[in-house]
Length: 435
Length: 89
Image (tube, rainbow over all chains, first blue to last red; front, side, top):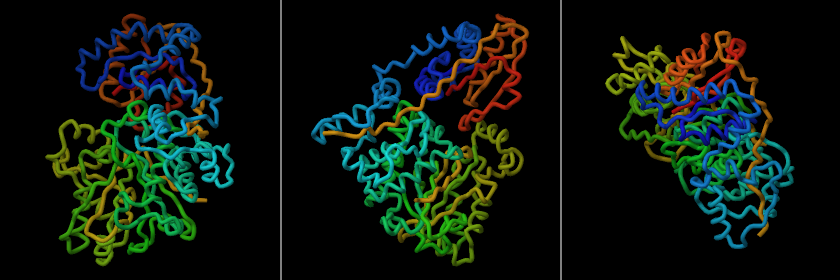
């Protein structure tokens, strides 16, 4: 049996249902448990003791019937309806349905069902969806999307790509990204349902960047380019409509992030002093690839004054060393995206990509006076090798394995770079070829 | 207008509940905490209640980091007759 807080009951119940246990016994305690004292925890334990004992001993069929009926109150929270009461996610759900004739009414309907990111969508008509599929089999299963294990058939994915504003030649990127983010190494279930503001960032590399016009230069992370905007948005709509990650229901991000609307970019291979990151992975430069990262939105690195690689990278390291980032106490693969002007100076001083990683690993140190006693205790238990000196008196290293840092080059002219902290070590960058 | 359904069919596996147990000194209860603060404290108070009120004497702990998938060790699965998990926040 499981115990959860009332605030997270919907998430727990939806995940249990996805795993075939809609009647899993669950005892509920008030949220938040984390800030209660020991006496309160003892009181809560006493209040649920009899229920726990019953759940461990009673007839399974009776328990199943009892708890199956204890769904969260969807009347108060409309977004929960899509998780528990939607006929459109059922095995016998129709592929097609009759909707309003006006785009305005259709968008009102889709918003009310929790099927959008809040912005208007294009109607997923059969004609547009067929064009998006480009002859592919609509019933082909690409992946199961966590946390609700929604079946990502090509047809359902194409409908979301239409809604997002994709052109048909964007669809192979969306398809590759979906397959990548559903690789177990990416840990999509946690990425989708965590309170952390991480999202799925999609890096595209190879010839397809030029043919589709995927922006790698000015505003690489920003607005103004259809391919970047629509591909990233299609991924988000798939996460919502197929994965079930409705904000406030299964997507439990405390703060959220504007990066959750769309986050797709390319590496600026033309302006990079080093081979592309995908080439560094040993991938065929004649092929195109997609890599997904479970990251926060970009943290800017402004250094207009650094004259040498060391000076610029020291500023990058200082931005990387953030005590509020998950990587600080969970390690993982933080992503550093160097602007071309920074990269030019750094490479001009003879630094390879591996040298950059080594420098950042050595210099990204959080000063001890920015580490709370509570956090220090966590670090002593989990990452004692990150502490410099007695109890971290010399600071706490952000990364100890240089190979864990991912270094890319993107952006336009200007003396800026960016750092993308990740969800932590439980998510890995995953790459798939675009076909 | 006619529209395509954008929603994914939620996969539903059929997994029956595990057989239940009779609480007592011969039963081993697993206590599974997801590393969120106080989940282990709540479970420890439950452990005391199960021991005092129902005579359970054998417990096994399993802790995991909150962000990681829960994969019980073979030993934990083998040794426990029942598991209580606290996935709190």
